[in-house]
Image 1 (cartoon, protein in one colour):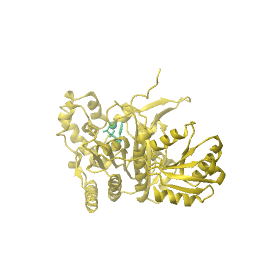
Image 2 (spheres, rainbow, N blue to C red; image 1 turned 120 degrees about the vertical axis):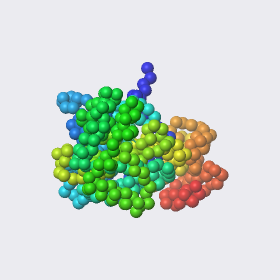
Image 3 (cartoon, helix red, strand yellow; image 1 turned 30 degrees about the vertical axis):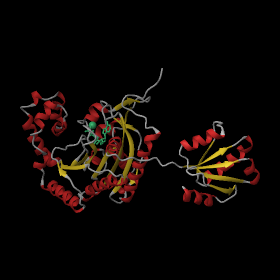
Amino acid sequence: MAFSVPKGTKDILPDEVAGWQRAEQAFSGVCAEYGFREIRIPTFEHTEVFTRGVGGSTDVVRKEMYTFEDKGGRSMTLRPEGTAGVVRSFIENGMSSLPAPVRLYYMINAFRYEKMQKGRYREFHQFGVEAFGSQGPDIDAEIISLLVLFFERMGVRETSLCINSIGCPECRSVYYEELRKYFSDKLTDMCADCNERMKQNPMRILDCKESRCKVYTADAPRQLQYLCEGCKEHFEGLKSALNDLGIDYTVDPGIVRGLDYYTRTVFEFVSDHVGTQGTICGGGRYDKLVEMMDGPAVPGVGFAMGVERFLMELQSQGIELQEKRSVKVYIANLSDETLASCRKLAYRLRCGGIGCETDLVSRSFRAQMKYANKAGIPFVAVIGPDEVAGGTFSLKRMSDGATAEFSIDDSIPDINHYISEKN
Ligand code: ATP
Ligand code: MG
C-alpha cells in the first residue's frame, strides 16, 4: 500500500520552497523595520483559548477546529489561527508592562477542518502581526502600510484594500436591534445556521455564503450607518492616515470578518486571481479581546495573511522566484588515491563558506562532470594524482572551460574572490 497525504494537507516540495523562503525573509524584514519582533507560540492550546478567543458564534469554533482529548483527559485544539494564542501569551508573560505598543509578528501553520477547495486547506500557513496598547487609528494604518510594503517588495501588484468599521459594543447593540428587526420576517427562508446566528451574533449572518441568505443580506442595514461619535472619528482618522500615506482603499460596509473579536477597524486585501477564495489577508482591531481572555484592558490590532493564497497570487501575476543555489563548486574525484584530498578540500571550502559537493555515489569521472553540469554548478575542482603530489587543484569554469590553478593551502578568501568574480 502506498501512503498519501491526508486530505487538505500538502507537501511543500524543494522546487516550491524558494517562494516560501523569499516570502518569509521579506515579511520578517519588513516587520523588523516597523519595530515588530517575532513570537513563536505552541501548535496546540487548551481548547478554551480558542472558544473564548476566537468566539463561540464563529464557523471556526463551531465547525472547523481539530479538537482532541490528550492522554491526561484535557481538551486540546490545534491552532486554527494565531491571534488567540498570541493574546494568551501576551497575558501569561505580563507583556502589558512593556512599553506600548507591544508589536509582535508570527509565521505559523494553522489547522481548520474545512471543505477542500483551491486556496482552502486543512493545514495552511499564516503570516500575522499583533500590536497591543495603542488605541488610535495610526497603528491600524501602519500595519496596513506594512502589508503594502511587503507586497511591493515581493513584486505583487493589483491587490485591493477594502476597509470598514464594525463599531464598538455600545454602537453595535443599537445596530443589532436594527439587524434583528430587518431579518425577523425573513428567517423562515434562511439557513439553520443563520437562525442560530440571529440569536448569538446577528452580524455573522452577513458573512453567510448560502445563496438563499445572500438574497437578504445584500440589502441589510450596515454597521457603518450606526457608528457612535467615537467610532466615527476613529474611522475618519484611519482614512486620513491612509490618504497621507497615499494608500488606495475602498470602503466596503459589507466586511464583517469571520472572527468574533473584532471592533472598529476591519480590513481585507482581496485579489481577483485567487478565484472564489479571493481574500489574501484579513485583519482589524480587537479592543476587548485581551480583557475577554482575563487580561488587562489593553486594545489590540492585527492581521493574518494566508501564505498559500499569497503565493498563488504571486504565481498568477507571473512572478517567478528562483531558488538561490549555494553550491558553487563540484569537486571531481578521479580515483581512490585522490579521495582523501577531495574530502579535505570539500570540508575546507565549506568551513570557509564556499558551497560544494563531491561524489557520494561512485560515479565515473565522466558521469561526475555530467552531473555537475546538469545540476548547474558553475565550477569544477579537479584533483588528479599530479595535483595531489603538488598540493594543488585546478578550478574549471563550466561555462567556457577557463581554468585556474590553486594551491591546496591558498586562502579561502582568495578562492572565494575568484569564484565571485568569474561566476
Ligand atoms: P475565508 O472567508 O476565506 O474563510 P476567514 O475569514 O476564515 O477566510 P481568517 O480567519 O481571517 O480567514 O484568516 C486570514 C487569512 O488566512 C485568510 O484571508 C486566508 O488567506 C487564510 N485562510 C483562512 N482559512 C484558510 C484555509 N482553510 N486555507 C488556506 N488559507 C486560509
Ligand atoms: Mg473561513
